[in-house]
Image (cartoon, rainbow, N blue to C red):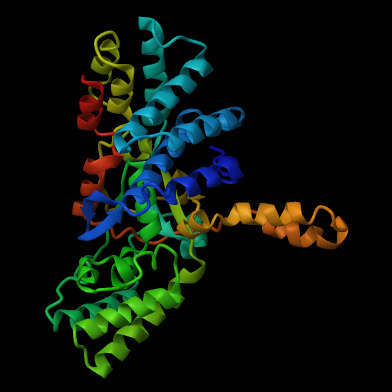
Length: 410
């Protein structure tokens, strides 16, 4: 699966940037509330868009279609009326691409069945589930895979912070179970949810620095601090929260020093969102019991709806209590929030164009360095919260059957 070519495409990053920074909906807040914090409309749109991108990669997996796909995706993301509309248009695009690849129609019964069988084979039988993590653990994951090992130093740091906040009646500032003796590896079959947690990984740092429900009590704080991986904004947020709960100077110093230690250990200022693609067959999630029923319904149910029944998330949370060898996964580094938000790749390309009138031999090495969309790879342990995972799934990101039914009138 050559995902790198698509992820390095400047058109894709431009699309993601325009979705995230859409001025029309930039200040809207989604109806969903994840972990107690408000979530922006545009962030949901971004996750849905990446959901479409990942599903395209898994199902089509052919670079010759990339430009066509991105042109169509650009049109879709520039002209959708709501999240439901974006989901359905994404489904329709996948159907169109599969029909083109198979050279079949989307109207004849047997052709429609062939499309569904193809999507089922690519996305379910030979598809993937996902585990998200930050890039500091790249080498570890690629060498030994995903493990249940617990970092004792990390655990002690988290207990210390949790104890101080709890003494001020701010319970569960960290949602993770700090009493666990062995850690499950959290996996999901939803690409959008995987990307969502890749942005927030590790979850405990996201909660501490900007994404806990307790930040709603503050009049002012930087909501994007952890998404941007901005050390100073994250530390400022945490200091404000410490002050809000009336910590002693000693307590606040302990919390902030512990934060510094964790930040440095995780190299978060340079962190990039990573996702391990794990073969469904290795998790025994490579079949659907009702697939024959789905395929038989092609003449009575809308094709977009049937595709959603195949690709819709069935396992928002999978807990794996044994290690996963590096032989059974592929690590993919995704575009980071700050790269998308700041349109960094396009900025670099503009620099390249501006320098074309100068002596190329002088600037060549520098330009080549800049134009690389050079992702680092890695791994952290998914501290997924079941309620949050299920919430984000039900609201928008699993291509839910309820949404499809309501919109299509099925």
